[in-house]
Structures are given as C-alpha cells and as structure tokens.
Length: 360
Image (tube, rainbow, N blue to C red; front, side, top):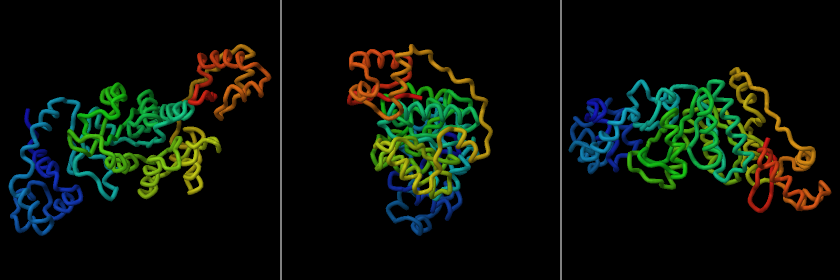
C-alpha cells in the first residue's frame, strides 16, 4: 500500500537515529512542518542542529528505514500518529516533551478518552493483584480507560480489569510495537490489541532497553487524569510514574497496606508526601466527581465452620502455618488441610516462604 503521503516526511525525520525528539520539536517550531524542514537549505537547518545532522536531513532523512513501517501499516490495526494529527492524545500536548510520533496498535480512539493510570510492583502479592484488578474493573465501568505499562504484576492486573470493564485499557510500552515484552504477556498483548490499544513512542524494532521504561512513564501519567499506585517497594519504578504525575499537575492516589510489608513502603511514602489514601475505586471516582457503575452484590463463599473459623484467624497480613496453629489451637496438619479448602474457595493465596494471606 505504501506510506500515506503526509506521513512520509515525519518518518524521514523521526527515524534518523541522530535526531532526538527534542531537536525535532525545535526544528518544527523553526520551520513549521516536516516538509519545510526537508526542503530547507543546509545553512538554515544548521542554525538549529549540528552540520552533520543538517547534512543527513538535507539528504532526504532516513529514507532507507521507511519500508518496515510501510509493511507494518498494511495491518489495519496499526497506526502512526503525528503531532499534527487530530487523533494525537490531547492530554500529551500539555506535557513538556510530547513525542513527535506515536505508534498505536488496536483502538486508537481510546487515546482520546478520560484515563486513569494504575501502576505498581512487578512482584505483587495476590492481594495486590486482586485489588488492582477490581479497582480497574470498577473504574473502567465508570467510564475511565485504564492506563498502565504492561509489566508483570500490578500493571498486568490493571489491564485485565480495564478490559473486563466497559472502557478498555491502554498499555504504554517501552519497546517497538513489533516486540512483546515481557514475552509472558503475549496473550495479554493480543487481547489489548483486539479490545484496547498498545502505544509506544519507540520505533519498530526497538528492544527492551532499561533506560526506555522510566522514559515511557511520563506518557502513562501524561495521558491520564491521575495515577493510582497499588503496592510499591521503597525504590519502585512506579514511584517515578507517581512523581511525574505530580509534576504534570495530576492527582496521585496510593493504596495503603500492612506496615510490615516491603511492598507497602512506597505507597506509605506517597501518602506522607500528600498522595490521597484510597481504599476503594469509589474514593477515586469521588475525587473526579464521576458516578460509579452500580455494583453487583458481592458473592460470599459458603465455607464449612472450621474453615471459616481459620479464615477469621488469618487476617490480611501474611501468616505462616505455625502462627495459625497457635492462633487457632489446631494442629499444623489440620491447618494445612483447611488452608487447601480456603485456597480452592479463593479465600486465601499461598505466598513464598510457606505463608498465606487472605484475599478480599
């Protein structure tokens, strides 16, 4: 099919490895359009960029890199969105460094909807995953598209919940869109492409480079009304997204946890710094004055009396078998049998180190 005529000049510039996004934005300010940049004299372009880069631009830009993008665009699910397009996410125009080009796969109309970022630990607990998924489903049903980064743990749970709800989900990734990272999320990526949207500022073929993931976080926060952090260690990358959200003037929310859990440290720090403590999706919706969708009545599992009694002893902090034996007065073999029943019923989850935690 070939490239759309109005897109080719953008790609000739954006695919030059030597030309940074910041330099391209300065050239656009100076000349007004990619066509004008490519048609300008070497002397005029050299005012904004160095002489070598000016020579590459005046020589036609990255002409040899266009074919893979043209082939990728043959799939009707794939899109390249430029700063000049009406479909460019309006929210990103207000961040300090909007990408000149965005690659999208799936339903790009979701990029124009109100969004909420939900992020957190890759090494999430079962309780954290359940919280992220239930929050995301409720917020999606209330009309907010769920935005996250498709990492394992909380991000993946957020996408699953958003897709289960009415408004879908946006995954902002740190690779080219022809690469799925992490590979374990390939089924989730296919689901997002079918019913949500995958978004990247990185050219096709860009591998999973460590520096690109913190960089893409500004888009996760930038495209959303606010950012919710569910489980984050003291040095979690999710705190970068929260900081960027605050710098962008967005609301920051944090879900509290046990004072004994390392994965609560980051959330508690955010709360001390002024993030809003949230215990339910309704807390977030109230902040934005959005009405929530009617909630179905909760299903309460019918448990045998002995299993219910042990469940009452577990609580929501991780707990080992010996502690439960002491609390309940039951032998460890009986406790293990009852824990198996509770796991099957979906009431508790096994954690590393032989510990168990109640799942709300």
